[in-house]
Length: 175
Image (tube, rainbow, N blue to C red):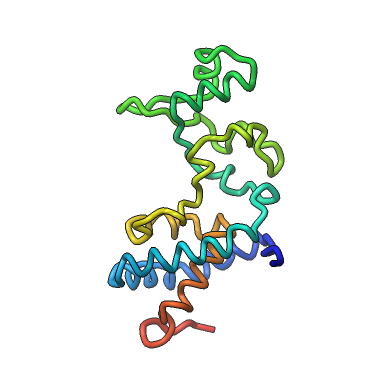
């Protein structure tokens, strides 16, 4: 299976050009059977994700707010040879609810397009773009928000448009 080329400029342009279309697709998906959409998205994700080299992209690391868990914070602090308290003071912020997020965007651990703590990266990073999870139609806002950022999301969404019949009878693509 060949790799899917990463062309971030093309994806950004398409996100702008297809903004109205993507909002219509989001509305269309909300009226579909959620379980069926999940099955399609999971299959497409399994087909697309292995064909995109995320370490050659790193675009998500430049724009995501990363939530962290205490055990992850401890693991990355240890990897960096810092006491946990020092590490947390340098890299984290706490929300009013006590959750922690990295305090910088882009991610302070991004070096070029690669994560400098990749083996110990946060679960939020491991899970992105969350297409393997159930209830895809509940996450459409963030999915469409990252359509112009992530080659995986872009490719899955475009293929899903074709598979669901979105262009036949619901939306007339301008091309």
